[in-house]
Image 1: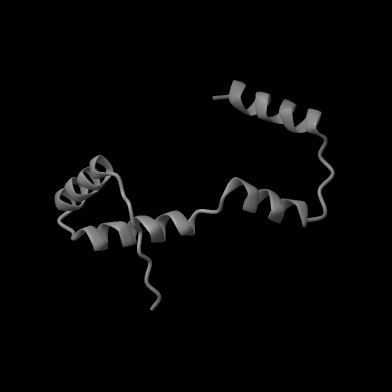
Image 2: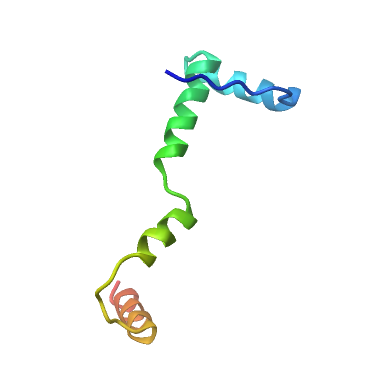
Amino acid sequence: MPSVQIKSVPEPTHLVLRQRAARAHQSLQEYLLELLVTHAAEPTVGEVLDRVEGRSGGAVTFELAAELIRHDRAGR
């Protein structure tokens, strides 16, 4: 499994991360690995837009979509 090393972490940042890891009953490495895995699992806005851009179908105009959302919100 690959490794990642981060150098020159500011001391206040390191302290906060160590404290959070301790509160989660994890080592700093376990805590940071969990953060990285969770972060990587969520697509960025750019990635989502790239996927959407490649799709075809659907012919709802922006105006109709906005009207449907307003209608839905009004019914709540």
